Image 1 (cartoon, one colour):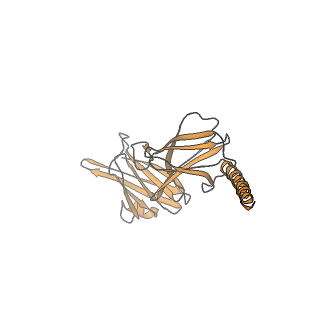
Image 2: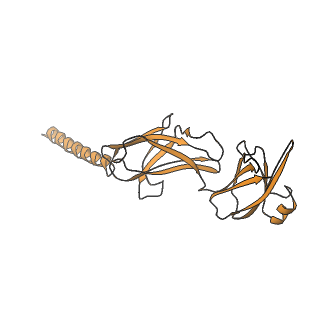
Image 3: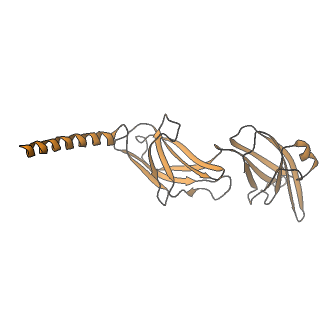
Length: 228
């Protein structure tokens, strides 16, 4: 009789545990829908190579009403080809979020998604965002040809008087443009900055002086300089 009671007790407890685990696994997120896709990174600040696969990238799916990426429902890691997949989703609205810290620059994507309305794999592209510090992006061109200038020197001043009197002496930072005429710097305090750009190579001797106001601690600031 004792062994029968033990067997019945074990059976009841096992049944209750099985029911509890089943409810816990389903929750509000469980259904038969899915979302899949591929992660890419496009470094528009430092590269002209276009989109590259974000292999082994971290991706989260969150509630559409929650802007905080820490409050995610599921997280996953893309494979070597940037592919990811979330299954057992409902037909509700969600957000797909992914980010990557790369020095002073953060790359991120935050896209709305409804599994009931998509039938093809999604393409998610992470772009630079200035959510940690501000970014000053400079691009130098030849005013005559409108072509990008390689190895132009851009000197930054916080004093307008110094910038007017000098070309680079007294500047607090010097930038050199890449083959696409681009250069950037970060972590500038809000305020006015004065830029003296020059290019002296062979028969070329062109320059320009300009200014830009940094208004916030975070965000992108872009200026195009046409040297003549």
